[in-house]
Image (tube, rainbow, N blue to C red; front, side, top):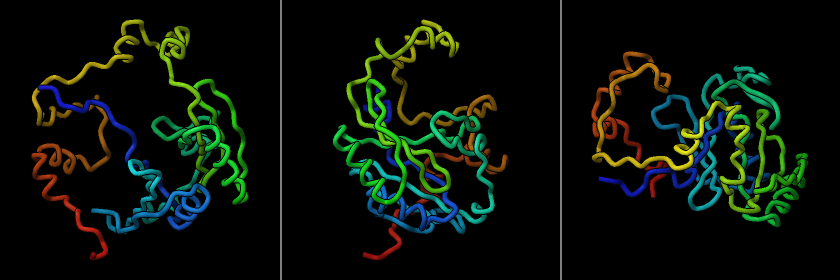
Length: 230
C-alpha cells in the first residue's frame, strides 16, 4: 500500500540555538520581518525556552534557549563557518538561506536589513537563483535567495563533480528518482543498528524509547494545550 506523501512538502521550522533568545527574536522579527507567534517553556525540556516566528502560513523560524548555552564557546571553523565559503564541523549548519519570491522581493529584503545597520553583500547571480548574504546573532551565516529559474538536473548535475563526490552513474540515477515506499503503513521500529544515524540520548533511555510502541510515546509526550487559556 503506497502512502500519499513520500517526501517533505517544505520546511515546517528550522530551530536555532540562542545564547539570549530576546536578541534573536528582535533580529528575526524587526530586521527580517518575521512576526513572533509563539513563546513558551520548551516541551519536556526543563529550563528551555522555545520561540516561533512565522515566515509564511506553512513555514516558521524557531529559536531555542537552554541553560548554559551562553557558556559554550562559538568557534569559527568548528561550531560556525563564519561565511558561506568557510568550513564548520560535519553535521553543523554551514549557512541558512531564506527565500524571497522574486528579485524585487530580494532587493526589498536587502534594503530592510541594511536599514537596521546590518551589512549585506549582493545580490550575487548563481544561475538558478540570486542571493544576498549577511550575518545574524551568535555569528550565524545567513542568506536570502530568489529563484531565477527551475533547477534543471540535466544542466546542474555536473558529471565531473559526481566523480569528485564518489557518486557513480547508477547511484546518480537513484538519487535523481528516489524509489517510493510501497510497504504496509504503520511500519514498526527496525532493530537497532549502530551504523545508522541516532539521536544523542543516554543509551538505556534511548533503547527504552525505541522499544516503546509509537502510541505509548505519543500518549506520554502530549503538549497540545497552549500556555495561555483562550
